[in-house]
Image (cartoon, rainbow, N blue to C red; front, side):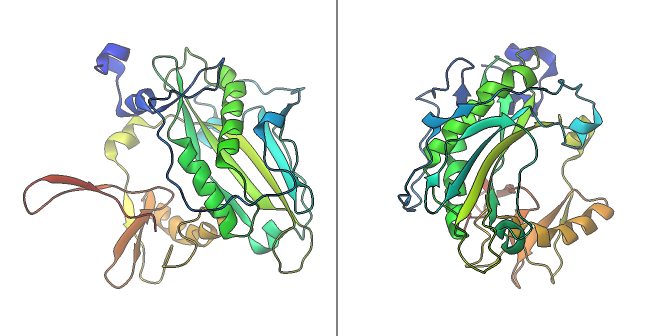
Length: 316
């Protein structure tokens, strides 16, 4: 289908992306389209048995007493990525009992002791994905099972509890089903909500050990539309300095853990002060490209035979 047949002269590449993404969600059903959601690859990570596994079928839904008003797209909270939706999903885990029943609760504060493992030893990981309202009225996520598989890999890398990625995906889809009708109505095609599944070690013992308690929570925030001026100008990248390294072999670069991001903020801040958008992270004496700040990078080059080729750094 031609792009202009969908929404006329207002076509943008961003809108086409939101129209074509593969995973489809029906507001009345969370079933996947069988022909558009390829299975994620096996990561060879055993989901360890626990007294109670993470089970989306046990989800408990609580009322939201004071829902937030939907905001205009130019509201400062949206532009500053602070316009959170009304609900989030939480579940707790202990080594003795396993996973609790997941719950839908109002978005708000979580409770942690000052000595919590996540605060003291950075036992925390997360994922990031977006749900798009297409110009055909459908809701779409882009290959979310891959994100859920990676979150399992990240969690086990830092000794947080394992879970079935498919159960996490069911919870994500349920949150989309609950929040999208208000925050992404069908008359606002192209709108985007950003999802942030997070797991933290909540064990209050100050001892350096594998956490015996953890919390999982999933929340959403309204994502601002791209600035046409910025999109047309492209993203400006500043090559990282020789003294700064984002990831290295056999480190945690392949896991999405907070400990990878905090140390990178100083270099990111310097790039922003010089008018750049992100840091192009390089590694080794031959300055190999690894990634670009908070995102991946793709390069189009011409091979010796004259063919165009799209390349991206490997995930390992």
